[in-house]
Length: 135
Image: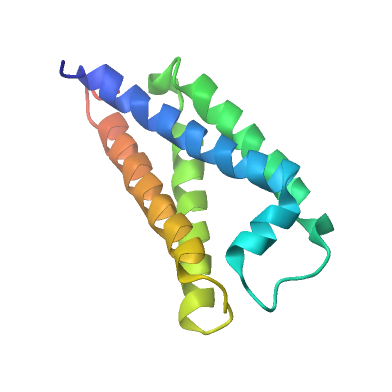
């Protein structure tokens, strides 16, 4: 069964929310496991700095989920999310290319690609909002 245009636009918010809550829960509840998964020898031994980012990601997930209920009124949130996802992807890419990250490559490339995909999804939403009769 094909999605309507409205459902397709709304699904992007839900996708962003699901990704953010999964990463948020990992960082908030299992920060040591997140560091172990990275296999980065330069990762700090104390994961005490990681849970706050998980809490913030869960808040972003809630904002994206709530935005799905009225996507036509969420332009500011969409622009903010697009910029955030882009900056996250670029910062992770930089740390990989510059050789700063020495851990498991899959652990860094998965979030790079996910954040680039979410950036594209948010930009798509922005272009739909800019058109008459868009979102």
